[in-house]
Image (cartoon, rainbow, N blue to C red; front, top):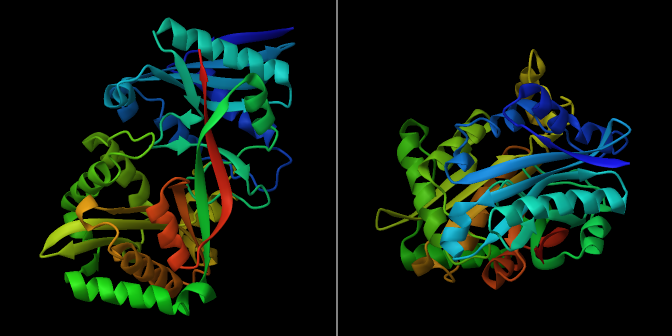
Length: 372
């Protein structure tokens, strides 16, 4: 008999049971990258920014005393305030290939969300669109890039068979070194943008990191304001993001665009440290952290995680100038491939930008909803 138990994330023992379950699901999957347990645990500390405006209830599914699934029911007051909505979320979903188990997990999350006055269940979001977002639906033959999601292909059926409907697709583009470096169109568009608008692109000033982080927040909140699923970043969230990236940041991959001495855009890429984390099995200490330095030169991928331009300066070719600079800088670091992710499938402007730089869609993710 399947039993669903609530988990108290403030209890270290219970939280560990919840967080370590994926090791069972992915034990024979060569493409899975174990998450760093330290980072996951930080997301379940009361000071984590999400808890300033959200609630999370964790559940596990048990059969004969053995854990066979997990889910989080998530209430995000900031999202509903911004969107004038009553949407709840599910996240941290992992499950054996059994529809009955998945259904019981979704039913339990639905009941909790309904008790909070919500009428839609959306996801997967762990815990929000500013964190781990979307279900992988194409591209299972390759490990995920840094900070991107991964899941077994059978999750698609578990979710859609329950009645969830796709509401948006998220795209990941792949760029190859040889396709970008010889791209005359990208160079031409980038040059025109720089000359026409007096655009200057500079790398981050690490000595003024607080000011730079504020620029990132301002661009993020204005450039993405009307995007699907948008939730503004708070100062605390930006600080957390900066703290996560700072130890592995490559300054030449954090770029700001200026026109008339005003920051009008930002591009951020990170080396794909999943190549290193894959060897750590979730543990940074006592000595695994050294691999971040010793294995760095083995990394052949980078991921462009942010490209934001103020609305006034969009559709002017400035994105090509950013892509050209950040990709060239990455290739100077011995990088051979770049991923740009994720991009909304209805974001025609960004998709055209990808075409200019010869990007090809190589992974797809979906987000889903169901009325409750």
